[in-house]
Image 1 (tube, helix red, strand yellow):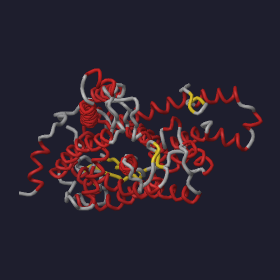
Image 2 (cartoon, rainbow, N blue to C red; image 1 turned 60 degrees about the vertical axis):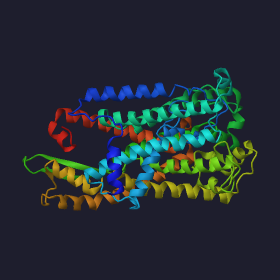
Image 3 (cartoon, rainbow, N blue to C red; image 1 turned 90 degrees about the vertical axis):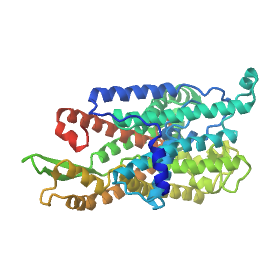
Image 4 (cartoon, helix red, strand yellow; image 1 turned 30 degrees about the vertical axis):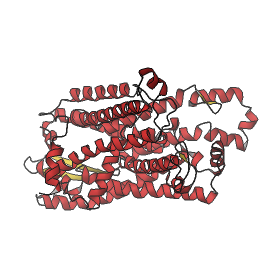
Amino acid sequence: MTLRDTLEPFFNKLPAVASPEKHVHFKDKLWWTLGILLLYFALANVPLFGMSQDSVDLFESYRAFFAGASGTLVLLGIGPIVTASIVLQLLVGADIIKMDLSDPRDQAFFQGAQKFLVFVMIILEALPQLLGGYIQPDPGLASTLGVGLGVITLLLLIQIFIGGTLVLFMDEVVSKWGIGSGVGLFIVAGISQQIVTGIFNWELENGLPVGLIPKWIYIAQNTEMDYLLSGEGVLFMLVSGGILALLSTVVIFLLVVYVESTRIEIPLAHSAVRGARGRFPVKLIYASVLPMILVRALQANIQMIGIILSGRGITFLGEFSGSTPLNGIMYYLSPINSPYDWIPSLVRQSFATYGATAPATWQIALHVLIDATFLIAGGIIFALFWIETTGMGAKQTAQKIFNSGMQIPGFRRNIGSIEKVMQRYIPKVTVIGGAFIGLLTLIASLLGTLGSAGGTGLLLTVSIVYRLYEDIASEQMMEMHPMIRSFFGEQ
């Protein structure tokens, strides 16, 4: 008996959200989606019972696209789901685990293995933070309850595990009963909240209001016009004043919407119904921007290892101030988030607040180059993995088209002919799209965004919202045309 034969029955017994037995109507899908969104916001406002205020958020820089909320039940957000997906995709991509993801049985095994890995990752991401002293138990509560700090730590671990599990099943509910995916929905919710806060927040930070509008009002009331018209004043308004972040946000929004609408359309005709024609769109961003989450999640996990080692006095990989790397290889592997990470004068200013020596100009340039390589090369690699593991590859797409009764005019009606045409477009477009979205993420990260949502976060939000709009339009079309529903495998 192979390892697979041993694990398959176990994976099949893992708890799962039941799939609908028949087509779920659009209104019902909409209610399920809204219900899960409200539940997510509720969980994001439930604080972890027993956590000390002295706790440090290891993933502070990654909150935007991990869809987590510091100090709450959804502390880990979608981190465990994304990390499990990375591990499994790398194992399958390297042929360490041999699977044919066009085979339904292999697909089911992959999904079962991924779910099991999510449970493992919840523990692996929570334990180092608890045992390393980053998530600290409240000594006052322990004294009041008359128990040791170890009991409070165990209680925190249980809460984090429950929160991580709820996020997993909420994602599954949206995927099966709602519109789009839960992962995308939670990202949009978190980043939209950050952008709104970044526009209207009156709280002070470094002597200025956080929100863009309050900041401009404050600057207009308290800053001399002569200073604002000087070179230093212009740089101040561009960076600290938020103008660069605003322009970046608007440009990235327009670019993503434009690129999402750029596609190659392959003509289709129904083999049995004369005159019934259609088109299969192969978008420039065919794999969506979700592979960017995988790239940033990989960086986040590398950084977490560095932070934990640094906290234990092992600094050969680099030293940290909170979750910010100050030197060593971890500095070069950290993501670029704003102009404060690459404009030399701003980098020196930022490092001065940590009481650390700022890197030289060539080190800053190398940091940018490594992050660019991570984003562009990682975007290509994970995009290729993504289309294979989500059934969007040439072979799986050809099978869907064939099963729906459609064919490509001028070619024989068999799976091989359709696959040959799909193979001509899908892999190439996936590579180009993965590289382009990586480059776009880099530009957005260099310029910064409103609400410190980050280039990756903003890119994900705009793309996910656009695709959600398309999914809603598709759902409404399937409600009107049952034949279209059969193409997507709906009953």
